[in-house]
Image 1 (cartoon, one colour):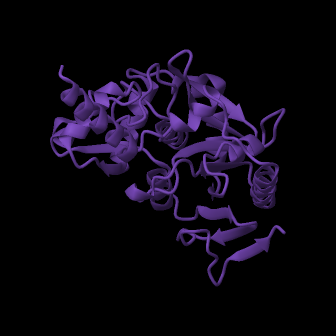
Image 2 (cartoon, one colour):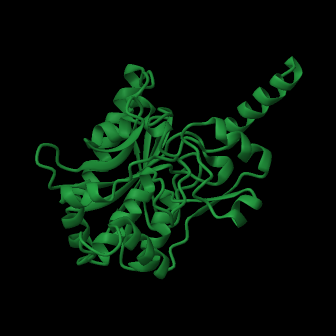
Length: 307
């Protein structure tokens, strides 16, 4: 290969990495592989105090389980505020409200389940200057079913795929990302799917999601050339996606936004609380409409100054 050709391919690959949200779950788990984001004492203090507000909302809810989503790397160009979801459980024996979630174990090159304390979940942000957390609270019996299923270690592990892909297609069992594990957990819990069956638990969960009209988030990559260069990124895959989507340079991927849209549609009585921090302030917003970009409080929002 001549030097010019290699430079062109290298530039295209860098462009792919800058455009494609490869951070979906892999970047969320980089702190398990590389050094965590360096935080100043002031930033750490603000994040810990912010986490205290999240905990206070969970404790005041009277619930025992919640869906939690966290902002990560900037996916704003794709219209995505959140990249990573998990299930927060009051009944975690050693750490109440710990978040059960999927992460990519880099050394083993495979997905794992991990129970992370609420403070660690908040501190895992990749932008300590501004961050968002979304809390979705469920009515009974949906909350009771989800709690029971999420705490069932055998069931939780039965839903864990052996191979990871950040852009996993939601209706294939070949791969899985962190948000897809949450979706399949919801399906298993709400459809009361037994562990044993003719098909795998993941297959039956995906079939139920399809029957319920679950729609994943659509990412328009914009170029089949960029999709081709994705082959050089070990946590991106194409072979689980429909040919018609690939022909249009589209990926359909489970994201926190699609999880919340499905919950809102399926369980109309579910409640949502969104919190954000920026410039030594915390904003608390109740409802399904998002907080304004920049963590700007609306007329009905609660504003707390941290100074």
